[in-house]
Length: 339
Image 1 (cartoon, helix red, strand yellow):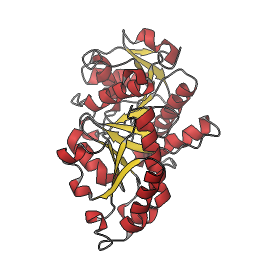
Image 2 (cartoon, one colour):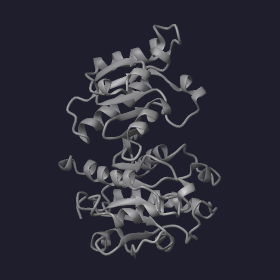
Image 3 (cartoon, rainbow, N blue to C red):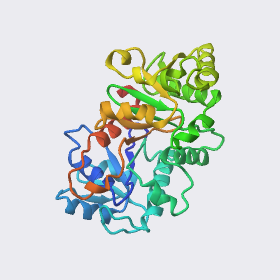
Image 4 (cartoon, rainbow, N blue to C red):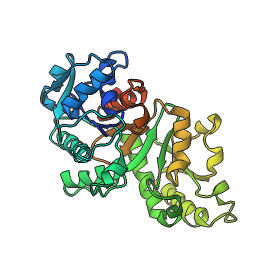
């Protein structure tokens, strides 16, 4: 089976969250949302129990990734991975953490061996994983480590992107405290992040000469050093280096004037200096249909841009828009002919 024909691998995510029902609801609404074939790595019994809990008549079919395309028209294909778990929406189980990690690892292995074409990850609870010794700030960094493990010799530099219909953004620093951002920033980090973003925008998203708008760190981009030296000493030199390398980069831009409708016509993607600087506007403009995309990997990974939503898990009220968009984008990015 060629990568273009292979199904998309989906990791079940945190079992106590909405991940299981997102997968079930997506299969149930697959025609309405024009979704590609996918299978889930997770616990088949838990998924079956969640389907009954939320009143879905989705049939759960235990099968291998190779058999998923044949099974997909009849039910949700599930490749049993990890422990057998009780369905306890909103209530974490200690036994679940290893299963969550194992499902992600298994999906990446499926892609490496050609059994899957791309990966869509359901939300995880990082705090729950930390208790078991999980050593990564989040999915993005973990997938980078798995890439280097499974593709020896590859220097994977994972970069987080939130992509929506109206805005695409990339944070240069990701899951660190605000007080740590100035010390973490340096010119090379900005340049490396921008180069990865530009490359994937060209090769996967189809932008021949992507326009990158780069935010300043400080209010008003520092006002020529009056409010912090980082924009003069770090951000500006990085932008100049990118221009010399042939990248269409502008800035540093004040973040508070960069996201209105007229400004958004002037660029294809925004690079921000820290997580909330760009994720707040991205999620405000497209909370239900934006997608988390990991750039800089040897495979396509997307995810809904929300969390585990414990408060509504098991209620059947979860919206699948972002998860469905993640599935569609995973298929398109793994098969550029569909863009």
